[in-house]
Every structure is written in structure tokens, then in C-alpha cells.
Amino acid sequence: MSDRIGNIIELAFSKGERNALLRSTLSVKRWFGRQLKGSKKQGTSYIVRMDLETAESLLHALESDLSHVADEGERRKLLKASDRIRETLGEDEDEAPSPFEGGPGEIPDALKEALEEIAGQAVEEGLTYNELMEDEEGLKARLEEYVLGLDEPDEELGGLAPNQMFRLINYGWWKEPYCIHVNDRLPGDELERLPIIYNTRLLLQLLMEEGRVKATNAGNLNRKTVKRMLDEGMNTYGRHLGRFMQLDPLMRDYLKVFNEEDVPFCHIPRVIAGLAGLIARTSTRFYIIDEGAWVARPENMGRLFARLFHTFFRSFNLAYCDMMPDLYSELRAFPYTLYLISRLDEGEWVLINGREEDYLHPVLVQEVRDHDNPHFTIDFVLRVRYLEKLEGFGLLELYEGEAEAGSRQGPIYFRKTPLFDRFLFFDLPNGPVV
Image 1 (cartoon, one colour):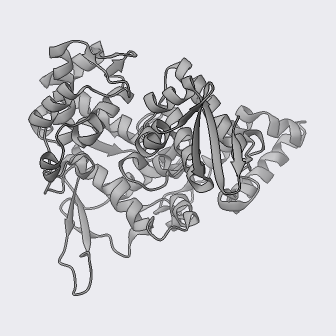
Image 2: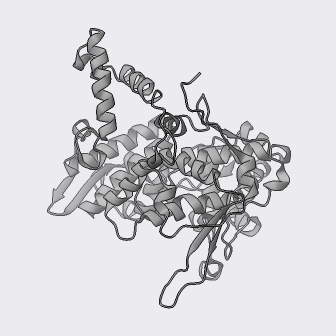
Image 3: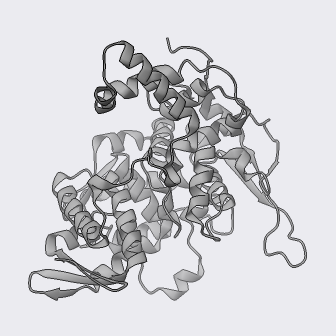
């Protein structure tokens, strides 16, 4: 049972749920692991006390992590834990507000018009309004057909017509008919010194060399393997490249031993490789699967790069690399930013400051504003969530100019690298899908 006392939450998890939270999650384990490990046992339950805001953050992180959990047994335990938190917060998943009912997810006027027109057509075909709305797949197909017929360019959509924007967001590089084409045949000499490639290949090679590697109770790599990654891996600290995987060298003097999560250029590649289906884990061991061994070969480096890009920007929770909120539309809106960057001239430096909204989807901009957090800004999302990650893949360069007197940060510029246009190709015809 879970209790609520004033502003304090008492959550009671079973042993299996607590272990699943610590073993099979990403964000939850990272940001709430200490509280879960410090939970007090009462009978057969483990009690965790936290305030309402922290409990809401825990629920948000857990729901995000659930999309990364493939094991059905672990998913069931995590879903039960989610239900406990939701029940204590007084939230009923079945009564969650619809995006059609106002608030931050209020339906746009253009979509209201679309629904009215679609409803009118359905009535002419003999359907009632309720029948139309209850047939989710049918309604989705009608909406798609409607939007794909809208071919008037819109400046608020970066000059794209609504049908082009629909394709960009819903088809991207992952679904036919593709409108972004990924080159997975790039030569290894263009990729081998990228930290995401170098460190992932090193991890795959270690697993091939050592066979089944022992996992810790927390589900991470053991310290012996981490030590090899620490000694042999690529740490780009002091350079812009791959900031989300960097380790401050001072930490090597401060820490006596290193766990996996202490070494970002070991931890992040391990997480991404797992999400990408290149490595797997039993309850006690990590091992490489055939696909991982295949892409680890030098001649298949382009395939590995494309696989990691797809996983990172389609499945990975970008908020995991910082301590800011998750964004529902972050990954869905990402192809729009890619498209806008693709239109820049090669070598052209672009000033970010004051132009952040020019490179983000309007829905994402509004979602950031709805958080009303002075530290979680549109600039942060563009620079940290998108541009620095693309820089880590070698697709962009970032440059910080000299700060003015009294300012902590100088102007930030970015530009495409030659690799960007060799890796990504955009095909956005304005017309019906053939």
C-alpha cells in the first residue's frame, strides 16, 4: 500500500518491483537510485518517502524508461510500480486529460477544422460521430489522408507544406515512404575517431574478447571491464566533441574505483548498444549477439554508425544525459531540426543566440515554455539536447565566441560538418504519397 501524508509521499514497493526499478531502468536508477536503495523494509514491502514533486518526477522518469524495457517480466513489475505511484498521486491513467481537452496539449485550430471536415464526410458515408471517434485506426487514416492533401507552403513550418511536415515527422528515416535517407555505407576512416563509434566498438570488442562478462547487481558492467574502458576508451574532455560522454580527468584522482555510471564514455555506449540490440544481458552476464559482432568489423563501421544514430535519436531518452525534464515531442520533432540544418550552406557558421526558435518545431517550443522553468529554456533544448548530441556524432561543430564583460557565456555558433550531407539526404516532394 502507498500512503500520502500532507506533502510527503510514502511509496511501498514489493521486493521484485524495487529490484526492477534498480535493475531495468535508465533515468529512474540514475536520478532516484539512492532513494530506492535507502528504502526501509516493512514486512514484505520497501518504503520510500519523498515529496509530491519528486514523486511526480519519478513517475515521469519511469514512464519514459518503460519504452526501453523489452523483458516482459520486468515490464510487468515496472507497470505495477507505476500504478502504485499514480494511485498515490491521485492520478487515474484512464482519466488522464485528452489532448483535445485543453491545457498544454490543446488541439490546434487547424486540427479542429480537419476533424470537422472529416466528421462531415463520415456522416455522408453513413457513420455516426461516435462510430468515427471509436475507430482509432480509421480516424488516423482519415487524418493522414486529409493532411497529405494540404500542399500550401507555410512560413511557420520553415517553408514546408503541412503534408511535407507530416512526412518528415511521421516517416523520417525509419518508415516507408522515407523522406530522410541515411547513408550506412560511409567508410571507416571517416568514422573511426568519433567518440561514439570508437567507444562502442571498443565495448563490443571487449565483449567478444572476454565472452560473457559478469554484470553487477545493479545491472551494470563490472569494475574490471569498466577499468579497461577507462584506460583504453576515448575521453574527449577539453574538446567540444562528445560532451555528453566526457569524464573530468580530476575524477580519476578523486575516485579510488570506478563503477560504470562514473565513466560516461563507457556507460552511454553500453546503454545505446543495448537499446540497439547489439549486446544483451541475462540476470548475471553481458554478452554480444551476432549482429553486434558483425557491425564491430572495420568494414561495417558505416552500418554501426547508422544503427547508433537511429537508436540514439529514436529510442534513447535524451534527458538521461542531463538533469532536466523529459519532453514528449523531443524525438518526434527532431527530424524538423535536421531538415532546417540540412538547408544551411556547408561551412556557414550560424549564431544560435536569439534564433533558437528558428531551429525547433513550434510544438516543441511550446512544450518547453509550458514547463515554466527558468533553467530549462529553448536555448538549452536546442544546444544541449540537439546540437551537442549531433556534434557527438560528428555531424556538427559548435563554437563559443568571447564573452562580453559581465557575461558568463559568449555567443554560440554551429555549422554542419561535411559528414552531415554525406550521411543524410532529404526527399520531401509536395504532393500525394505514391
